[in-house]
Image 1 (cartoon, rainbow, N blue to C red):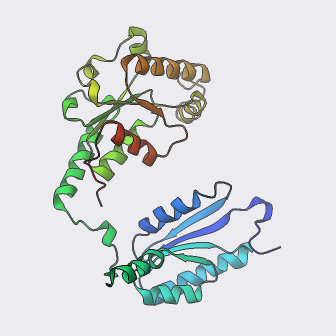
Image 2 (tube, rainbow, N blue to C red):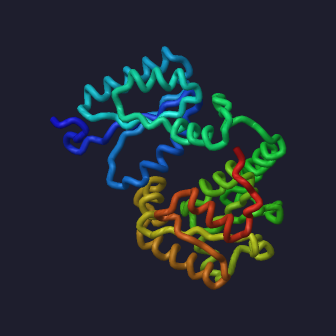
Image 3 (spheres, helix red, strand yellow):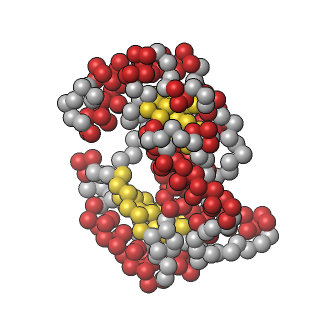
Length: 284
């Protein structure tokens, strides 16, 4: 078998390695890998490789995967200390992309200064006010998930509406956790469509509303995992609910987008721009 050529469509091994949590490395690696949509890969994250000994042992572990699969693994790493990075790169036979070195070294040259080379700086609490804002936003968002309460909706900065299982909850939590934005989400149900108007609780907060829709086929798949073979999950019902929901949002002048093929990051960016919440910088 020719090396790097998957047998029977086997996925390419991908390793995310770091002397910290590996979250930054994973984020950067996924951003790169999405540029290769036809690539099938199996990803493994290995955090806290913070000594030379661990680095060499991790490299040998990756090398064994290459021996077993006949494919050279793709390795994305973020080592803050050069000595550990050098030990790992020397021992690893995979294709190693050392992400920090790619960005930090040129910047050191341009700025004429050394970087801190500290582990986990990305995830340190650097601003207590921002941290407290994030905690408050998460608490608010969990309390106001899925229309659990109408109380305090006037405090929300965003109120997401849409049919059940259209992606409101994960989007709400992402906005709260990453930007410290207080988000409520409120499901629109067949009774609302039959009545022909928004729920009473939403009528005085219209300027905070943003809608999510979804393709009926995708909605059917999601709901069928939760309640198989039910009317709730049937394709016919999904088509009707989505059509009725989009008609109501159009009639009410509510901005909305489809979550079918968009990432949470894309959805969040659109919501922030549409509702002019750019003052909320992403919280480190």
